[in-house]
Length: 119
Image (cartoon, rainbow, N blue to C red):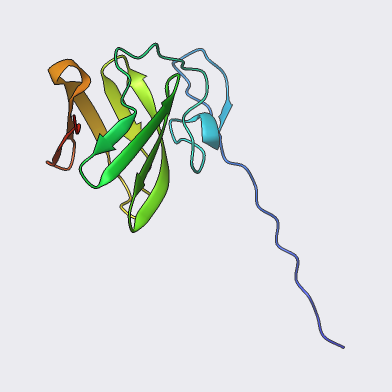
């Protein structure tokens, strides 16, 4: 007879002692859930980024984004401020936030690249 072991995942709780906010689950501790944003923050975007950006295409609905490229994606994104976005490029962990300028026609990414919207 074969012996089977059952493993159980336990949620880690974060309890800041000085914040007075009580305990929150790991997903609420500043780490967005897979493929999504941290809960609780809605942003009114300054720009509509929908369109072609070189090889990339951005679709926007409210403050939510979808970024697609020929051989990558789609990736979920969202506004963190009216002129700042974050995209969860799952094939490039830790990347990227983007600062929007030029009337919504330029994105300067945290990895040093710049995208310009096709006109």
